[in-house]
Image (tube, rainbow, N blue to C red; front, side, top):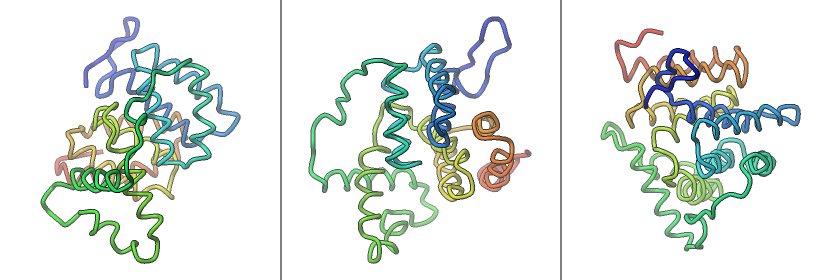
Length: 232
């Protein structure tokens, strides 16, 4: 993650400017109501100005499908398109494929994210207890969320996980388990403690100080467990 200088000011460290504004767009997309349309469009434009690609911003919309649900993603999409204009064809989603192969890809994605060797974090271990009672939910998680969305390679794997942390932090307490899990994934993939702290700084602006403070408390144990010398 390089440093970016803005008009003579000191460099922004830990997150690049395009990614910073892409993450801000992600949190806006997850928490916004109609009053926040102007801010959402503004940060999409900032992301473009600093070099984010239309394809990367489309990934934010796709992530919103998973983090906040279909209704918000459907409302966000035309707002993003109003700024970006015509998007390039999404080659990854262009060809239909059997659900079985999508689910298998989702299982592989989940296993790769949890490949620390410490515990059994396979798809069966994480989602197995829900399969008997909520099979549609488990299938949606493996086939759609993991197989269709999380397995994509438009965003860097670390950036994708940090975007998820930003989105879940902005949502609040309902998404804290997912926020903690994706923060762990980001750190395991090579994100720094400082990058996670930058996400919390973004959350102050996009979702308010109370949510950022609560997210910091929730994330501190994750940071301390993976980085014993961490000091908030």
